[in-house]
Length: 97
Length: 357
Image (cartoon, rainbow over all chains, first blue to last red; front, side):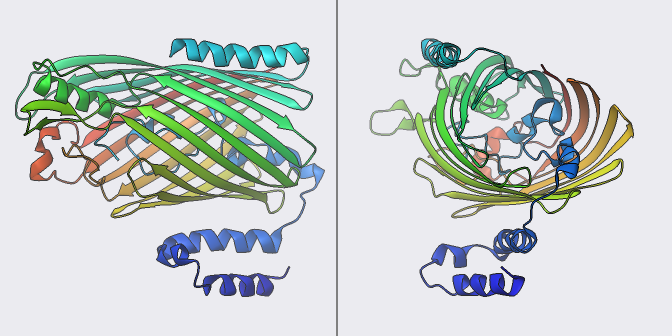
């Protein structure tokens, strides 16, 4: 699929009246969703075996934990709006959101 | 609760042990983290063990979080030194169906306070209402179940993972006087959370990779919280770079923007160091109950650095960071929590070891 074809699909998606949530989303959110999808779809290809070792470096492990993590996980107590797929429970207290 | 932990733990172990012999690759990991300021210290100790055997992978983790706080009220009450411990358990079982598809089920639970802030607020209520016979101490705990379906559409290069989770928390409730009875009553004590996320990873070539995660989380009586996180990572010889940006929104008025930039340098074959900078800003929490214990808008920044040593199957890493939180002034109705939501300088430490065998 070429980039222009992807853009056409995205435009038709954007004009669909049924997707009201999409239109309510702030511009920054929409750009952040569309940009990487466009890049990935236009560049989607298998990486050769010779590069697999490089891709196993910690810097590429976005969900790295323990010895392969870079940041202290406890900072999530201060920055409650950070996305964390591991934080399922609401925790905290009734008054906190 | 402890019995429940034991049941799930032993169920998982026995299910795998009954079917498999432990001959596949295994991994053990220990992590210690600290977040500390002059009056608040949070520590996390965790152990993790993972075993892969044939098409199955089992992942078990246990941990303890410790909290030490110097509670200091603004308007009334007494200074107290508070110490709490929270026990945590995680269990996951993954089945790989073929080179492209795998599925995971997981369970996690904790017994105790989930963060330092809920300890502070619970102490406030205890000092305010503790003399009334209707008052009782909170016993917070929570459990969650989840599933993930992962499609490695380009094995080794690209994958998509769809996750769904459900969690139930028994929280430290807020207390208020019932004007009709003249007695204190607790607020909501149970929160149910349903969340879903879609995560995409794609290596564009041998030195550039990107990640996109969109997620939504719905908690009892609240609007859904939508989030997106997007990262890029690249290497150039011994150097590595990573950029992450994210945005979170919840109606009617919460939003948060954050980002991280990181540079890594492999200066010797076994040694790697990194330095990074994180920024975070949100618009303040949304009132969810009668009493206002909400955090005002906060702006935080952290400069962090670390070192990693890797030799054969052993990896050691350590890191330190300096973090600053700047809160906007509190409104009149939550001045009670002025010492909880005051600007602080924090230090973060982490040390971890992983052994693959």
